[in-house]
Length: 212
Image 1 (spheres, helix red, strand yellow):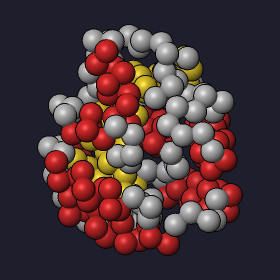
Image 2 (tube, one colour):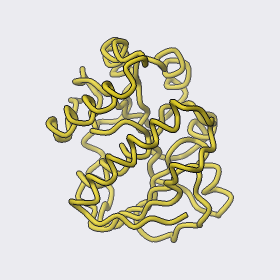
Image 3 (cartoon, helix red, strand yellow):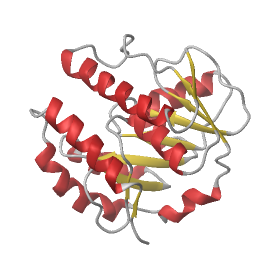
Image 4 (cartoon, helix red, strand yellow):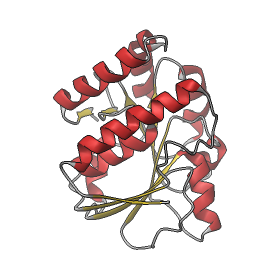
């Protein structure tokens, strides 16, 4: 099983953006995380092409609108898995760094793209062995079985993924930089503004439709 890199130039742009805006975060640990993450891979990244990517709904934690049950559903974080279950829906894919209700990810019968970076490697190694179908994602050049997707937050990485997989329609539920549900601090708000900038870049390439 080999790694996959989506758009190296866009990755370089995104990385230069967030490392310059948030230099106090532990980006140096990303290289160690990338080395460790690949050993937890249980699904060949090529499996991503087995899904129908034509129409994609991406559900983020602040979502207040139930998505339709047509097309591919991607949950961002375990919180959204639980949210979808309450609406009678199940995601096919979860994109997460395992810091928001990770137990929901473990109990989800879905493909999990779990992100490993410098600040979460202890948490990643604690939960990753309990996930049945796992493809690690990283934020530096990958080693072994893992995927590098441009972006910074779980939400914008999910949108980038859908775009690169050829989605013609991407519906985004709950992206709201002014509504913070996990924690409300300056770093989190800055992260959401970075995500907003990246989503604006994607929106120039493919139409994004936003719902509360």
